[in-house]
Image (tube, rainbow, N blue to C red):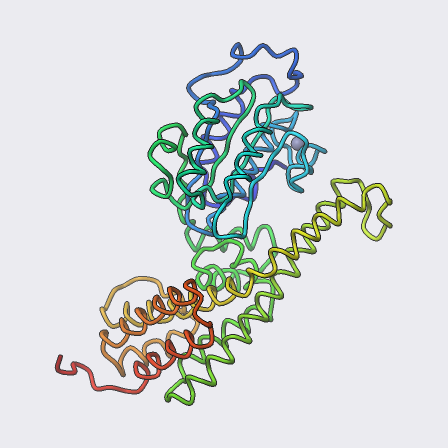
Length: 405
Ligand SMILES: [Zn+2]
């Protein structure tokens, strides 16, 4: 077993990180006895890394796997105390900046930069992970830039972002980029079969409907309620016909988004808590010793803060599902021979495609983008979803093809 096992469809990126971790010196020697530079192959190991890839491609998973490989005495075995602590984000030589806020504050980065100056306490390296390095204002990026320009000998920065273009050129020029690809639906399905014991058909459908977002695919494949919520979202969009439907439909979509957000939040909180307890050496069901309660309390406070963002994420997922529907419809209308995301309801997709022309499908897609923009500009989600469904209703009502423009 190793920390690389469950990173699906990213073998090229894994090779880069594996080679870097291996060239980073003997894993068994203590930081004090290893002579810096002597065991380091300059061509493969460096101090600053950038992992880029679309959401769900496993950017942060890869970043933490690399962190484990650097901090674990066995190169990332996945089972030792170091690896467990990395998984729980509690390793003493790991600093993490993960935010659910829109912007990373300059103070957060300053704190991180000052912690990066210390020597590692137990491992070969001190590793600093910034999960959303694209969420920094220029001023904040410049604080980080100084740290990247003069990195302490044993500090490794791992930044994650959707793409290189999301970072300032000055930052880009100081990091080694490793780009993840969107795993194929076959890769994601194979992972679900192997890792989660899901049957082939369910795995393939979940991989398609999640558009290769690994976390979402896992949920759709293993959680009946998540699957039912997605199906209801699509069905609702297919059946809305009037303004009245749109108003009722928007209210229902909000309920679905809320239920989905709550379910995800609860699952993630429970997983994090279990990982934190494991890393503190507390068995499931065992009482938490008083000395450790404050650590768990901190985690719970973090979780409460994050919960406030989750409804918006739930709405975002619904919009992604709706967009996949109209993407499929337009592909059929254009006669493109590309696998449908909603293959499972391809008859309905084709019916809608035939009853309509592509301009109204594109209008529905634009309306989804508008709804996203409005919600991020703090328009009440119900209003934004209503406006969206009114456009969808128009696209649904059978218009003759080739309407004069
Ligand atoms: Zn390990």
